[in-house]
Amino acid sequence: MTNGLVTVYDSVNVGAIPWNALCLLGYVDGKVPEIAGNYAAVRARFPLTGIVSVTTTGQSRAMMCDCERYDLTPEMVRTWTDSRLYMAPLPVVYASVSRFSRVLSAMRGHQWWWWAADWTGIPHLVPGSHATQYADPATSGGDYDVSVAKLSLLDALFSPPPPPKKGPKMIIVNNGTTQYILFDDGSVIPIDTPEDLAALAEVLPGSVTLSPAMVARFTQR
Image (cartoon, rainbow, N blue to C red; front, top):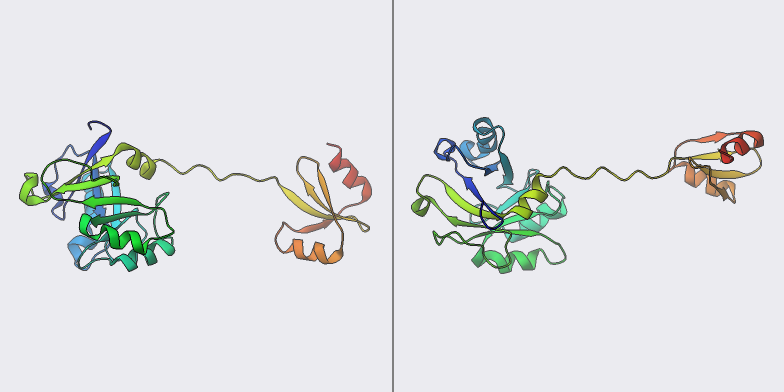
């Protein structure tokens, strides 16, 4: 890793990937078995290494989708995103520099991260991208592709999601005269009509009947 960039490898020939790779791409599906089984093969050889999951069909949950010839079109990228199949804070899209404008148009209204493809053979980050694949087997020195990715992107992909925020616990109370929403901190919101009570009973935990004394006991905690 240099200057906040991490080297990332990918290959259908998993045995060719350098043994000391810090990060990899792994394909979770594909039109041929060696691609469809790539993620499992990469995980088997590198059990402790971070692997960015990639779908080449747009039908699977993954961190990234592959938008190139024979794989997803820009319109399929939008469908994959709208289906919320991305396993990341934002969808990651692999696309060449020449396809970027079409993906940008298709993804209008969405935030996304771009994993660019620009095979110069020289490590670089295409402006606007969060990662760039810069070498294929012809220039990488082995039977694999090589990218550089921002450490901030990989941190976002591999960090555990924050725990869901817990709202206050609440129950619907009907004491025979007045209806309430009773919160676990003792606060109470009155419900004016039986119709409101019936509506809330569909979205809040079950309605219970408490005596006025029990309501007072709860609200005075």
